[in-house]
Image 1: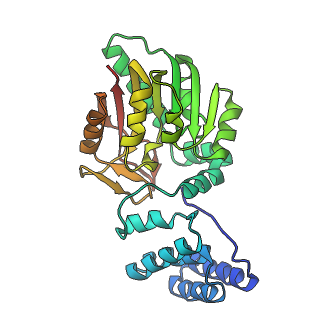
Image 2 (image 1 turned 90 degrees about the vertical axis):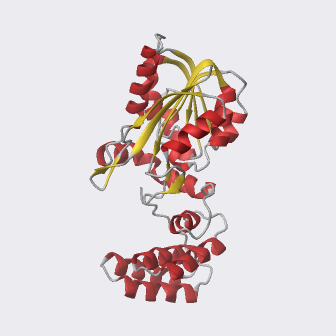
Length: 308
């Protein structure tokens, strides 16, 4: 999902030059667009949106060093980094992989909340909840256990598509999402007993030990680089016999990278290692594509782990 955030410079001339530069870029003239965007920055040196767009244009032009400088300018102008310039720097290899800026994730999903489901289902053929449900049913069948859960925690719940997939198999859902806009949409479904606006790890820390039978994250871990903190809290919150299930995007290596879609991609070796390190038993790990982008399935994995 492209991020369409604009933060006015407060200067009418700078804002107009920004719009002109954007128009030039959309018409296929990135060289002229970069020149005009620089003019906007000259008028308003702390114009975060102009710095960020200049960085994107420089990437397109193959001017990596100039792109890095522009993204750094965007962060200096907006330390909260609502545009996600730090994510772009991670993708360029200019900074180490770290967590995504919270303000970026919030603004990204607050922006998309009202049309999130139509974007995902109609345009991207989103299927992560169905993939999780099928994987959990398979694990429960192999264990000769009913696929019934009294209390489930839906991490990165979004608009509630994960809960909808499991609705007939769960008595009570808790939904957690960093985006207040997403929580508004999730509340409207009537599927959740509780909803919290917070990041996954912080919200889990407020849950009691051994209080959940199921923790699911449908296409949400792609916004988490280091999975260990959130999975460690998940292990604590799960009851013995409880299940964790989630999807990730993946790549051929063993570690974690920032993918071209500006989401983290986790290698299979990384997944098996982190699951073992937190004391859960890996019960299912298989290729699964959570969505389609650019007319091609996104490479992914579906994971089910259990607490013994």
